[in-house]
Image (tube, rainbow, N blue to C red; front, side):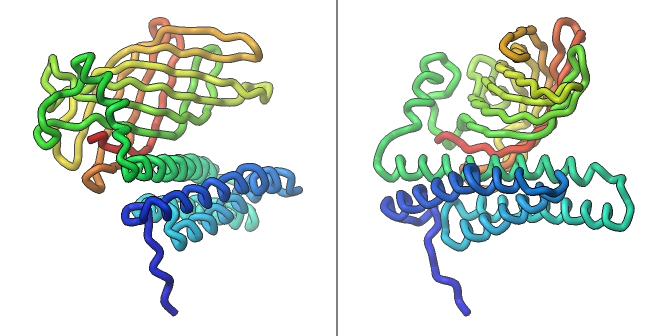
Length: 309
């Protein structure tokens, strides 16, 4: 049996893209508004409910790949991520079934994979929207690149000779320590651009905003907002780029209806891997120190970036 040749976002017409965006949006609404709440209400353990959700996401990823609803490399990546998370959770359930209650790392890794998979779903939808706008002859990159050029951050030279600005979306685990130590999750958006004054081939300036959450000892959810600005030194313009960076930012913690703000110093080290001319993967370890090490956060994130050229 041969599968129908359904175009993906890379070679679809504007009409096919619009239809794919609508169908993908409807399926995400069904998942978020019906499937996830339904699994939460099942009279099962947390790991079992999460495993069922992971397998549902594997089925959804298979459908999106079959229907061509997105960028094919991203569709394959999210299928692999959700499959790995489902396999790890199933393994954890099997181990508990035979009396082995340790290896909670399987559940933690699976949770991180599910967060990363959710990020790829969001990025896939955003890239479909950008592709539709680009096919409609609207120069969306002007909105991002013009302010950077006005500030002297982006180079006016041809795109082939200098690095392009990078728009990233990242997610991962966060260890928060300020009055209490808790493990949580974090989701962030970043925009990095060549920094002309220091040398545009090796220096970039990155503006980022992140949202993290964790549960206190009493079980209440805490929210952390992390805007920051960082200067990065990277290895060049090759397909694999290592980098280190430093800068500053804020840590805004919401407890009930009150907010507390702390100034943070930031250090980071990461790796970017280009998988196509415009898209790549990024992983990073970022450390924050609040009020001369009175508090810290450690963040290990994975994500995707797109070159804005």
